[in-house]
Amino acid sequence: GARLNLTTCDELEKAIDTNCAFSNSAVEAFTKASTENNNDFTIAFWIKRVWIASQLSPEKRFLPSINFYSSLSPPRHQLTVGKSLSRHGDVRYFSSCPAPASSLFPYENVDLAPVSQEGWSFIAISREADGGVTRVVVNGEAREERNAGLATCLED
Image (cartoon, rainbow, N blue to C red; front, side):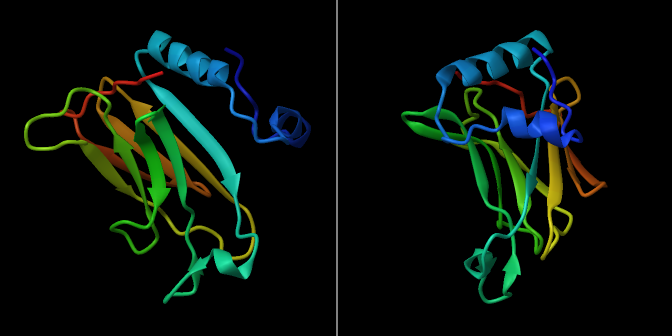
């Protein structure tokens, strides 16, 4: 499919769904494109604090919290951004492949670089299936986690 240039404000604005409608066709297109590209994918977005309630106690800092699902029924995470292990938050990539006996939902964790507390932050998350690498870039600062044993399997 066509790639969106996130640095062009007009192009980005045209791509935003103002009704927040859910379209399964978009999920199917994403999964198809990822499958055609060896199960690799990149998800990128801008985020900022919108009100003081966005800050987490007791630190009173803004930490993003976003969930991308591979299945809505039953609900199953594929990718999450939030506060788990790292002081600045984490990205967790969950594999939808059959889980080994030791784990119901195998995942890998990548620490986030700090996000802006006042302005916009740019976050890009990429998954490279062959190398088992999940890369996270926050405002130009890159972090990555290598886990060659965690397969990339996407559900519709």
